Image (cartoon, rainbow, N blue to C red):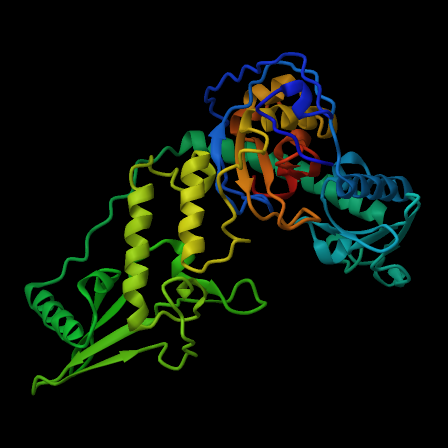
Length: 464
């Protein structure tokens, strides 16, 4: 669908969207939603601005992308064949892939016993006819009938329903108990003591810091580390370790294998030893790592930051702090930033060689929908596709991103608006049933407003 110039004329700009008013009124205010438990949705890997969704009612005709229609049709086919309840179908995350004959959509459990639930693959032809294959189809499930439900390796649809129902009951009890405990055990902040080096230890640190400067380290790069005095039987050494309070987490650790729990610190550890004759040695724990010719524009891809690369890292850290230090404590994550600040944040990472897939935030193009117009569409999608009521909208919080890259789109280089509506918290228990609490995400193409994807991340199977 050709793009129009949205700013010249609303009627001519968006033929597929009908506005009942030429001006939309967005009332922004902040409301508490209880204890946020910090869960980031799958699409929440970009920059964000925090706003409360309070929008005047506008008549909007929604436009859906073929990818969205395919996932929705596949989800409905899955629910019809296996009789999944609305609560059960919500645990599945769909991954559509375009094929020559239509779409294939693979559904995986979003965190609720994925091995036992298994995957469901739905194939849709061009006419929309669905064929479904369950991963554990053909397994002899009778072999496990005597085992308790939660110990069985596979679950039929009805067994999954039974397990989920028990899980939700337990989750509700857990929330009530947690809320009660929170009220009974109010504690103040924990006091933390400083390093507390002795005069002798500080003198040693200063001597060995000077030795490192003589070996080619700069003051700026050395400031990325903090010293740790290590005493052995016959010697005292100083190790320099990265200062985690100063260097962003994305810079201090990288995934290095297919195991999501295996990480390596690309800074490593510098151990400096001073001998009685004044001779010193410096050993680096990552000296054996492969050292490709990284540059100021690509060092973010390096598995280990060599001494020569540290000045680039120090320059990056200085710019990072210039951007985030003025922001409120606890809101230095891009999900709390205005769109322009989030764009600067992710551009800083991209300029250092970090992936645009991980840092996709940018400023909207002049030909894209404005944030306000995209928000009106998202508001309608939340109500019509994800069951959000006006009362729920008033109680929740909305985070918004503009992404250069989005994994949920068939067109990877086509920017998207992403809205993530959070509705959960201890104060919600009497207002919104647990089954309706969670995170709802709406992804729109930025140029046309087409719906690319919607996701409901239920609170009853996540950590909020």
